[in-house]
Image 1 (cartoon, helix red, strand yellow):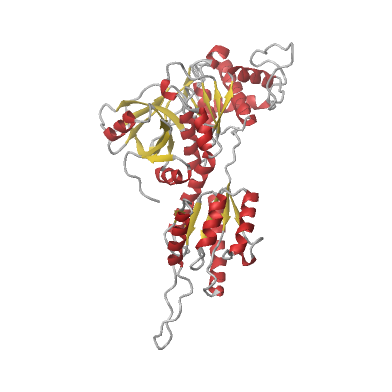
Image 2 (tube, rainbow, N blue to C red; image 1 turned 90 degrees about the vertical axis):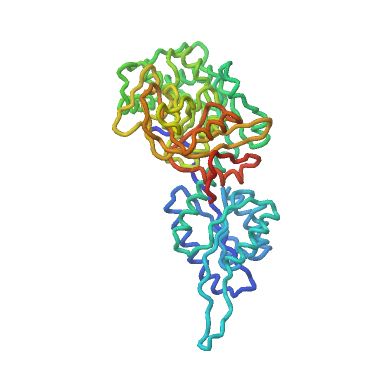
Amino acid sequence: MIRYTQDRTIVLGLVPVRRDMFPPEPAIALKDRVVKRFEEMAESNGDIHLVTIDAVVDGGMLWDLRDVEKVVDLFRAEKVDAIVFPHCNFGQEEVVAKTAAEIGKPVLLWGPRDPSPETDQSGKTGPRDFDTQCGMFATSRALKRYHVPFTYIENCWLDSQVLDRGFEEFLRVASVVKAFRGMRIGQIGARPRQFLSVKINESELLSKFGIEIVPIWPEEVKRTVEKLKRNMPLSPEGCELPMGQPPLPPGEGMLSDPRIADIVKEIKEAVDWSSIGHEAVEKMAYLEAAIMDLASVNRCQAVAVDCWGFSQDSYGIPSCFVLAELFDRGLPAACETDIHAAVGAVLLQAAARYTTPAFIADVTIRHPEDDNAELLWHCGPFAKSLVRKGTVPAVRECKGMYEIEGGPLTVVRFDQDDGNYMLLADEGEGTEGPKTTGNYVWFKVKNWVKWEKKLMYGPYIHHVSGIHGSFAKVLKEACKYLGPVAHDSVEPVEEM
C-alpha cells in the first residue's frame, strides 16, 4: 500500500549510572548485562535507535559531573527523544538530574534488584555492592527538585517481564510526546459556519505547545491535482500551473503520476465500488495523492479538512472516503475542520506505535437495549482496513458504508476552555448493536452515564478520536511531559 511517510523512529539515549564510592567492578559487570538487555528490548520493539554514551564517557557509565556536558552534547547532536537511566548500583542523582534537565525529554528510571547480601562461613555479613533501589529513591527526589517529570519501572530482576512491559509502555509514551511537540496540522478550508464547537485558538496552540496550523487553501489542492495529471513535481514555492494550461479531465494525459493507477487498483481490490464507477474512484485517488503531497511539502503530521465544501464543489464528490483512505495510508485526516480531533488522532496513532489507523467519530445515540453502550459513527471516513472481519467494505456516494471491528478501544478528546487544555482518555469495548449507515462501532463502557456527564460538562464536544487497543495508561503518563495539558478520564486509570 502507498503510505504517507512520517518519522516513527524513537531515538533513545541509554545512560547507565553508578556511585563512585561503591566498588566499581560489580557495577561494570552489571552494566554490560544491562546494556545487552536494553539492546535486545530495543530490537524487539522495532524502530528504536539506541544511543549509548560509550564514545564520550570512559567505561560507558555516568557518575562524574564533568562528563555531563559531553553526554548532553551527544544527545543533542543525536536528537534523542527520550533517556533511560538504568542504575547499576546506587547511582548518582546529581548527574541524572542535571542531564535530564538539560535535555528536557521523557525520562525513564529503572534499576535491577540486588542479589542477596553475602555472609562468610562465620555468619558475618559482608558489604552490599549495589543498593540500587535506595539510589533510585534518591534520584527521584533530585529530579523532583529540578522539576523534571519522569517515569519509572519498579525495581525488578533483569530478566523480568515487568521490565519488558514497562519499557514497551515507555516507548509508547515517548512516541506520543514526540508526535505532540512541534506538530503541524494542515488546515484545508475553513470550518463549517455552524460548527462553533470546533473553534480553536491557533496562536495559543503555537505558544503553549509548538503546535502549528498550516493553512492550505482548497485552490492549492485543485492545482496540485492538475500537476499530478501532468506528472509535474510539487515544490514548497507553490503549486501554480504554468500560464495558459487549462485543467485536464480525469484520466487524460500519458504523464499522469503513476501512483494514481496504484491507488485506484488498491481501492478497487479492497471495496465494493460498483455504485460509484471508475471516474469517481479516480477522482478520489487524485485527491488522496494531492493532499498527501501538500501535507508532505508542508511537513504536516495530520490534516483537518472542510469536508462539506471543497471536494463537492470542485469534483462533484464528497471527501468522506478520501479521508478514510488518508487514515489508512498513515495521515490522520479530520473531517469538519476539527483541529483538536486531528491532534487526538495523532496522539493515538503514536501511542499505538503506528500499527493501526485511528478514526474520528461523532458520539451519537445510546444503544436501544444496552444502557452502557453508545454509537460512535460518522458519514464514511473510517479506514477500510478497520472493517469488521468477514464483511466487504462498501463505498456509496464516495462514503464508506461499513461497521468496523470491535474489541478493545481507546477514545480521546483533546480540547480546552479559557486556555486550560485537557486530554480525556479512557477505554471501552466494541460490542454488538443494530446496523446503520455510514461507518460505525457500538462502544460499551462500564458506566455510560458518567461518560455522558463528562462530555456534557466539557470542555468536550460530540467529536472523539478512537483507536483499537488499550492506551489510556500511556496517554495519562504522556501528559506528564506535554506541558500544560491535564489528563482527564471517566473511570480511574491504572498507574504505570
